[in-house]
Length: 103
Image 1 (spheres, helix red, strand yellow):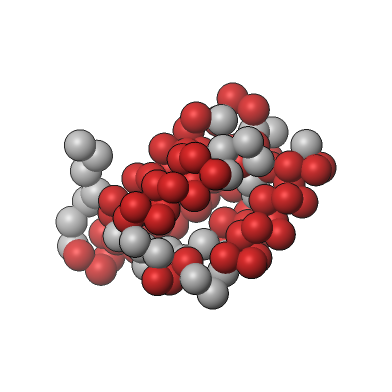
Image 2: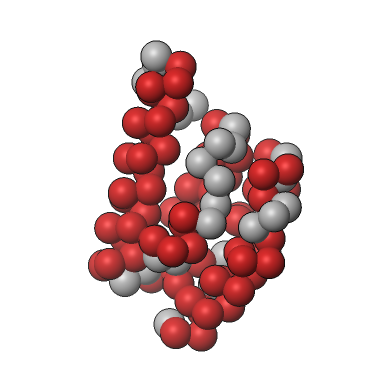
């Protein structure tokens, strides 16, 4: 798990400056395809490097990628993902006045 965590952290660190310009397709490519093997290493620090200003479609791609490996994520990482989801949805609700709906 330590190797996955390190590889994911370094990759997201390298992508950090590009993430704000990612399209929905970029999020899909990176989080549902390229990073799936290392996503079980996700934790709060990595999530903090992912902008929370992404579109809802990009957010869905990110969460879908995490969901594919959720059973492999350690308990602390699962809690970090939960906290990230709550923060994102709270922010979206405050900005738009609407609750987020999955289709």
